[in-house]
Amino acid sequence: MRQDIRVKPESRGSQTVEARAPGRQAPADSISLRGVGHSYGELQTLDRIELELPAHGVLGLVGPSGCGKSTLLELVCGLRAPGSGTIEVGGATGAAERLARCAFMPQRDLLLPWYSAIDNAALALRNQGMGRREARAAAAGLFERFGLEGFEASRPEELSGGMRQRVAFLRTLIAGKPVLALDEPFASLDAITRAEMQEWLAAALRADPRTVVLVTHDVEEALYLSDRVAVLSARPARIVAELSGPAPRAADRDAAVTDPAFVAAREEALHALRGS
Amino acid sequence: MHDSGSKGTTRWRRWLLPALLLAALVGLWQIACSTGAIADALNLESYLVPSPAEVASSLWENRGLLAENAWVTLREMLIGILAALVVGVGFAVLMHRWRVLRDAAYPLIVASQTIPIVVISPILVVWFGYGIAPKVVIVALICFFPITVNALDGLRSVDPEAVKMMRSLNASRWQRFRRVEAPAALPNLFTGIKIAVVIAPIGAVFAEWSGSSSGLGHLIQSDTAYYLVARQFASVVVLSALALALIGLAALAERRVVTWR
Image 1: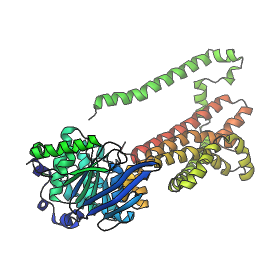
Image 2 (image 1 turned 30 degrees about the vertical axis):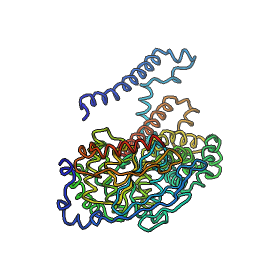
Image 3 (image 1 turned 90 degrees about the vertical axis):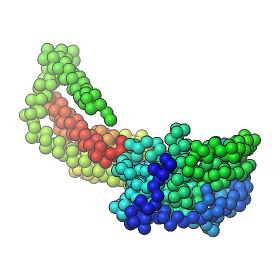
Image 4 (image 1 turned 120 degrees about the horizontal axis):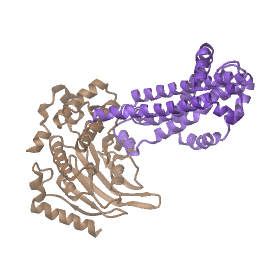
């Protein structure tokens, strides 16, 4: 029940915000990677990656540190061009077109210290040319829905780690892009806050489904949040296993992650990771 | 969040301790002069070694003259710093925007620092005459380096991940500059400005020594001929007070602008 306190149903937002916030239409794109390879100079990082993700699906990417999973995410977003193969996001293959369809959430929250929490969250709207007052009004509705009410004017350094991540996620969500690309969004948090944030994100995605690519080194996090988890090998990364949890983004996280089927999937993923 | 009492105490200590030390040093100087100790040691007439009290009275007696010349030097410094700020920041932005320009110009800017300003100062007097122009150019030349280098460092300090984030949030090149790079560069820019403000008087005085008819540097130089040592000290006091005031102004501006630190 806790997540229902954190993420309120959509009807709680004001009507003008509902109309304004790009998230409401919940656009989503399918993603497909065919034979994607990449290298930094001599160093080959990715080797013939094949992935298919339907619209509104959540794909988890797990792998050992430095295996190239963040690179893969940047490739999907069009922040980099692949050395070989094709990447399609919503039917678009060009890097600039992909970039237009993906919102990227970097590893650290990277909230801009010279802006208040709400101005950070509304950054995408400002970049789209919306006036400050209008952008704040649009973001305010989401602050209320996502349990950040009262912290609109706070400076990032005044927020806790979990709150900063929430603002960073809202910033990504508000961009209204069909695809959310999350690069280890909770890696910097302590275990308890991290579990809470996973529940929070699950609730957010239940309320506002998007196509999501989630990079993490935490198998449990990937299995709990994703419809499908791709396990990558050490560099050059290949997909060594694809599996899924029994109940992605279940309301009761504690029950979900102790479910025998979940535990079995986790063991399988860990086995694939170690064997790679 | 902070204990206001201890914060108040530290602020007091920050001002009080240097003030006490300064008072002690001035006191020592006063004693050494009034006993004639320094003059005897240097084997000089006592009027050549003025005491703080004599400097203070010279400061008061010559207040009109000093103010007049201080204004000349202050103007040279302010216009020079302002010119360095405009050109330096502009250049830093251009070098940040175009990598080729940075690779080509940056080593030259660093290398140019090996040229002693004292050497070009007479040349500039030949070129620009005895007016304010060569002084402004000299001040601007020596202030250009700290401002440009620090501004560029600031612009480059931006996290590459933040740039990726902004790109995926539809930011144009200008929006990335306006919302991320420029604010990130501000603390470094202020560091550069504070360094520039400290060295600006050196440039102004050198420039005045190379040829001028007014200014504190000029006054110090011409007082040498008449052994007006007390007034020379008075000029030095005024010059350093000007520099301190400028630093204070820069620090104040920094606190008003960079509110997130």
